[in-house]
Length: 479
Image (cartoon, rainbow, N blue to C red; front, top):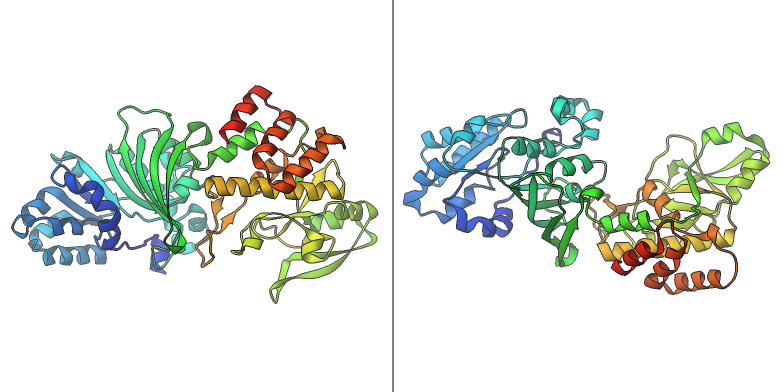
């Protein structure tokens, strides 16, 4: 429980030796190497392996400082230091028990060498902190100048920014790069002042006690604050020992979020006459439309024996017609199988009912019925379903699903992702069905969707988008 309440995930020395040391080995005498959230010290102590034994005491005195909020970790670090031949007196001087989230140790800024911070800080999401009594003590970090930040690791990093630490290596959740609400504000604030030099991104389990995907980020302070694009190289470590090398180009206008090419698409290809989208058939809808017409539904608030309970609702003709004329639902979370990826699906095909009802609270991870305005035929809804899934899978393949939020670590063959309802609505709004009439163009649209000819499909729908043809053409070529 302590691990979860503190947001602590201990790092192995192997992580340092494999991914971090090769990047700093030629700079050992140039910096004061610090870890303010040191845990067992495994991100700093391995440096001493590369210092001759007779020089370690002097090197430790001038080049190493460790700190942690937990006294037992401080004592463990002192013991480790002595095992490297460091005197206990010096170890106690350079390893301190301190709450560095609360305030930065200003005395470090008076040292003659510049600081280089290598750390695996605590990470705990603000939403979790608010919901649990044992973690509410951390709410004090998110007030005043820190208001709007969403995780403990962001507090640690912004403290470094405010104290002009110019070189950072942080082991943090991948939501720093891929998250939306959880990290938009923080990325905008932080990347105004820092360049990303390099990243190692892990889509496989690295820590024993957490399912959080993490990255190792190398950051360097800019000479002047700017909103220029963040360009850097990253290596993604996926399951089955697969490694992908990627060049990232993150833009300020898209809040420096990875996968922003998807956002550009939904921005530039929104139809001139888009469908309107709403979600959920709720208890309120049913109570407002009581009647004698029967309709079969599943209730996503009642899940037993690996399936949703079926119910017979009695409603008026208006609501019955609305439910039966909207046959699509959105699956917002990958199941882990390739047949169960996020996307649009047919309610009748998958559940053998007319609708998806929510008798309790709405949850974004349950199947959610989609209601379209104006109404379109069932045949056109099925065309929309196919279009949606072709477009979605195209961008998942092109961007390695980075525009989707990672759901959580699992043993599935691919990293499970969450599709947001805003993203769902945005893709639907690129479907130009309201601007088209049955005929040659409709036949062409069906053909491109059926054959999954995405490049031709994009060129085709651009003529129905709000943006000028010239601009859309340039964007299409870029995709």
